[in-house]
Image (cartoon, rainbow, N blue to C red):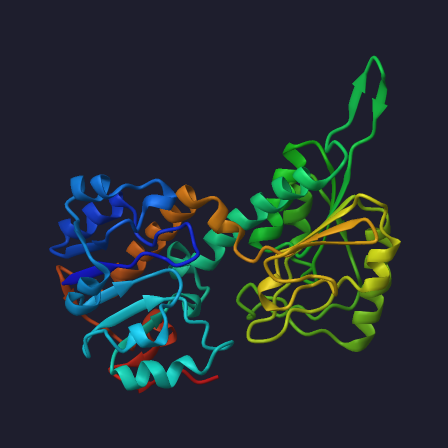
Length: 366
């Protein structure tokens, strides 16, 4: 099986690292890497060569690869350059961009969407969303710290005592829990809110206070995403969150609804009530943001409050992000590539859920 690794555009990560290349070769695969694919994540072409990979031009990847891998989808015109029988693995997000489906169908390829891998126990080792969310939660705290005009920890000095900063985390999924752990390590006082009452123990185990709103719908089948709540609950939530936001130095939001716009948790009025110098890091910026002032991939200021809407924070930690992503993909490939042969078994939930187009036939249903 000839596997091609594409260089990302506007992303510092690479989908496969040299260590994984060696493992793929050991399974009777040929691995081609586009020249310079790993440079921005500090994996040189020489390292790929030492691992047994072949460094080639981008055109060769499209011409020769039976399996192509990237983190973000390539442009539509490049999809048409792939071999008719090729398998293309990336995160297509068909629930946000259904226009990609006919493009994939016309190309006659098989498209495997990493973001569609079901969040079930046997697929945890393949979950790129969780791997990247963990990095984003970590980096969100560090980014907030660089913009906050205050210390995180409590300090007692000869010049007097400084109280700890107060941080509020909205959403205690993978990103939120990592943000809590990081903020606690840096000495901040941390509170966290989540509609899932099951998150209470996880939040408290990390040393944070759980902010609870009664009457939440708890949908355990939502795959780690937030779920729509009743209007009565939303009003209660809004009032309680507003109280806590007004007292916080940093607010980090993580709430996403699959296939829908992110819920607005922080209104303009709430921002206006925050103390000067406060910081909001919106990890839902990619889907419109949890704050009304959020602008995707921009840092803006409103009433002396900094609102950060960088949508791909995991890309700013490219070395470890690439390592985790690469391991996820290796575990995924093991499901349907064995001894260099492709075997797509649609009786397996992992395959049936993540294959959105098979040999030009659209399988994804919204």
